[in-house]
Image (tube, rainbow, N blue to C red):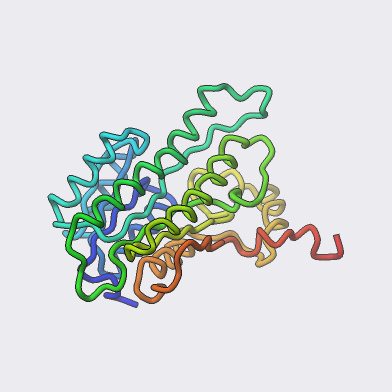
Length: 263
């Protein structure tokens, strides 16, 4: 519904491409001001902010850096006066079998995917409670943590990534429990296979796509817009009684499709 986030400002970390860019577009369409955070994709982030119009800016920063996260929120408030919605989306993969996985790659994935979300969520809670709540909005602040189906499904060869996403899920639920009395809502969205540049090999090659579709009962690969629609709903008053929930956007990937014919 157009305009349902009117008057609110959203920060989207990792917003320069893929799922993050789709979320930024969805929030903007719903009327929110949007800060497109990026780490390495400056040109893409600036192009997206220009596409979204005067209610959007691009701002760089590494979410695993405590000072950089504080500066991101400072820049948001300086430009738009407040922050109401925070989408903790930044994430990376550095895949290897455990025998070959370096400590450096283990730490980097956890630093960005889990510690980065912690730092962003902590700063969001601090800023929400420092500002005057909007009179026409039910929640004082709204956080959506972007996780993955691999918060639930083990993924051999990706142990650092799966561990980070499992951590995001319990961090999100624990934070939701802690801040609900302050009228701050915290939820998670766990995408399955989504058509983005980072996983192009899995959907551009016909044989790889066929194998991937065997894992998706609904029979199609998701689009960033599928995730954006759910995030926009969670950021709106329409979902005001929802907090601490993981919403799987996966075409049924978590339904154990291998058991569809009695296993």
